[in-house]
Image (cartoon, rainbow, N blue to C red; front, side, top):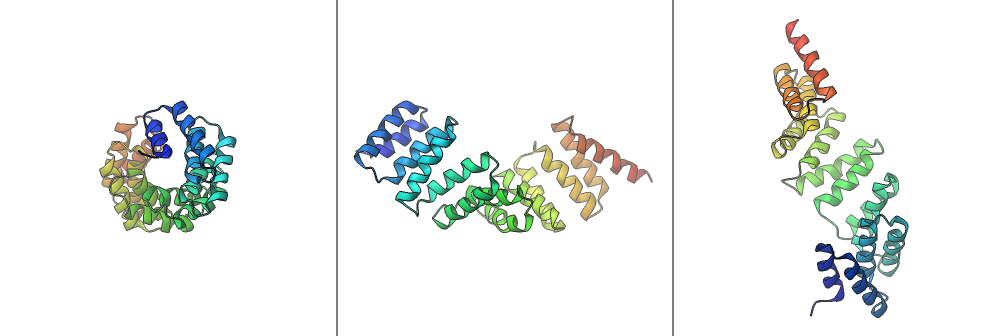
Length: 221
């Protein structure tokens, strides 16, 4: 017989939240020191935007088990979504130190620094996220952007190309790849190609439209 926690998780995955909450309530009553039950309860509350209640459940889980990586991670997500990036970064770091070692955790930690305009602090985490995934276009896009900001042109282009290969309709990745071609290797034709592909995907992409015009004028001179 699977545990009440396992049963609750299965119900959550089926969208049966009320039944899941009943099981988690039962688990907490029978095992008041079970951090996982509080985390799962908090995850349901967060899904329904019960932010303050969810926060209390995550904090309770952390008081019960200070090594509960999932509690730090879930609470970090809560703060990140509220644009409390500094607090989120601290909690993502604790999540990573306590066993949450997947690409998403490193990516969100990096993005917490990106959103504080701390590109150099973000870089190692975005790099680690890119090493742990082969299929997440957004990871390679954000890592490419960060590399471009610190003038690492060749690596920026490589990662932005990976983002575009994974998601051919990522207009912002296409646009920024065009900018990188223009700025780092002065390849106007490659830049125009990227801008035109971005415009195909998103006809009102103002920056790509502007970039294409500037590059065409440069070629005509």
